[in-house]
Image (cartoon, rainbow, N blue to C red; front, side, top):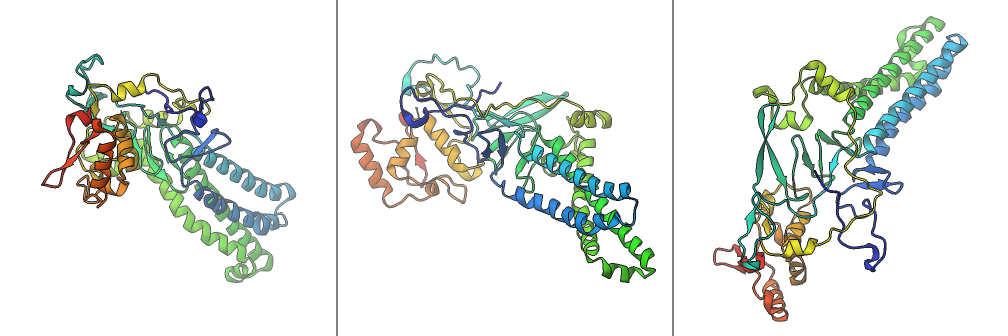
Length: 420
């Protein structure tokens, strides 16, 4: 349904040279490791902090609590306390990497906008052919209910139901839940299961450390026949771990309970905060048992991206993009501030590039700040050198002598031949 990402130029630009791999020509903000085998979000550095917050307290627990518990338990019982803590930590870190280092369900971008209904691709008339505007939304039926899907200007596709564009990773993600800064990755269709298992296992790890810290304090009290306060002064590491795990369990435990509610009602975090299904019917709710089966007991779909494949150049892309009967984005003519985008420059470059105007804008000296008016009015006031740059461009190329004029009202008018 969605084609793989297309590249525009071979590597190095030399004829016959091998084209770059998909991860090398990736237009999103992701960070790749091991030649595209692992994909992370742009905030992948926060993953090191998350690992430190897990490994550091467990290390303190093993050195100052579990090791000393061996003297109060039998040999096999004492060593098992430390082994369980180490094994649980490794399992928790493995889930963290599985949630953060895999494709969350990214939908590949289209190389060009989809065709409008009724367009056969053989319309004659060249530049005189009227522009065909893509509708902003479409209606689809999900479990007997009508759901609107939106057109993504950045990825040039209609998002499937439950898909959203992440402004941080700059990708459309299937069943988008949220972007987690602690994981450094979007949480979507292909990694939500591992994300919840990571959060829940972290909660259990906090409870495990908290419990055995109390057990160690009790053992010290019984051995010295002292009060709890005197026992605490003899084990400061236990006090620090008790406070740390008590605070942490409120965060990860609360998050576990919240996502347990979301799974029971088949919602995502994005849908819960935006749509409020408690006020209307949820078309995705299949019942408590089936909702949990969908998350934990269904096969994870394969990734729609082969990051280690070579970029395939689409033949005839330029002729289709620049030929007669061009397409207009649903937001053409609107202010850039009104467009749902990850990075606004990408959408403008893509839309204008499809109409053969991207190069003219760059050569004329139009910057992103001029295109992006913060008040959402589209073009802001032009630079003092803009008119001179356009006149120079017009003199160099008479065919593009007037790609746009500013009317008295301050808005830009683009002639039909330039838009074609």
